[in-house]
Length: 514
Image (cartoon, rainbow, N blue to C red; front, side, top):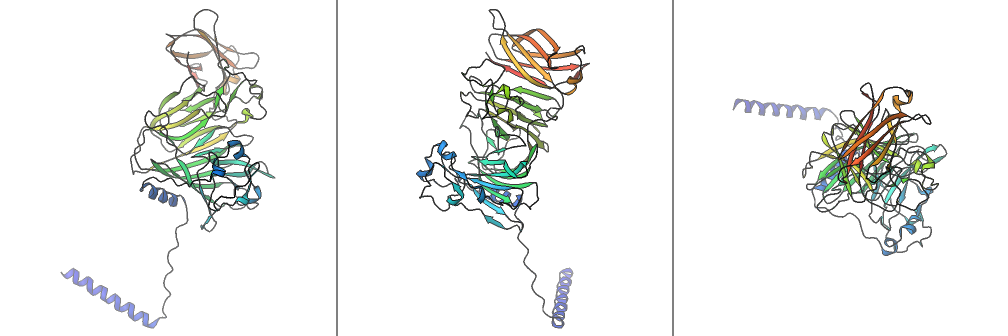
């Protein structure tokens, strides 16, 4: 009782003092209201969480038939006019936009984040586009919006701004380093790829926020909001152009419900045929592929190489790991003579490398190979599947660094597989001769009489007639052996070179199927 009374007296005395002081001093202006927080990743997180609290609703609006029923070839003739680019002649970066139409029917909202932090909507206008072969439709609504965007930057030379990164379709985006042409794609998220129930779910980016760069700034920040029936998500992209262009991706997912299979940092590519199997196509080109292998570095530091294949039926391969250091789809063969395609320029397709930022724990790298008979289809998918399951209404944050490169001494730093070839042996059995060429790292400095040995194994197959030699013609090290499959089953093989017990190369991993 006493304490309560003392407190009352104290408050009363203070009130008297304040009132007395105000009578002697001029009245003060009220304190200004606190400034609204600057728009940033936290803002997108709040929006994504708010959206996940509600039932999923398709954010797009229906396209008029005049533009929705365009053929893909006609749609491609619609081009953005460069003079209308966002930040035209005002920064190192400029942004152009894709028209909606054909298969790209979803609308994405685009907003500029100004230097003052204010938001400025980027609005659509038919005058921004050259319609090429297409007669400009007259029934397009003024709020049609865009299908996606692409960022330009002086990547090759200072007087021309090349395409650097493009976001178009679902959550797909493609990024380029110097002297590269588009090939493999990355994705914001993969849900239920190859699942046995319900099929794959395709999230898509519904909104983008582009942070206006200063005139000399050489990095660009984008924010994006992702949505799907199962998950909404907030994304931040920090893009740094160069010979190797890097994109630091940070994402927070807000699940509406459980997901059967979550795929982080997914990549897609195309592999029609290569050098390791008989060609089944009547084609003048020796090889056709955007990527020729999956590269991995395990949490224990081991480097793995898995050659890609165009299988006869859908195939999913899993590589279990803990604390993965990286993985990526790689285009290792850079010799034009191996492709002979002046238009596609497969030798210039970028390789992608994903390096987790932070600990990704336990999980698997999955490789999905889908049969195809045309090079227009992306039939290769790879991603990380965490062991931990998404829980409804519990946020999940992850980040990684995506690198687009042509040549790198880092992935891997030692000897690497440069060619794989197979052929049937002479005889009536189903045995095959397998040749693997290695080069790079310490291998290049070794002479032919060094005691280089091979570590080689096969599951569901027998191996014999093993040789290891340094080729005089090109200095590569070749492993040759005969494989005898058991009971006409698929054979899983691995191989690497050693010197005095130390590994010299990555581990070649190969799945031969009858």
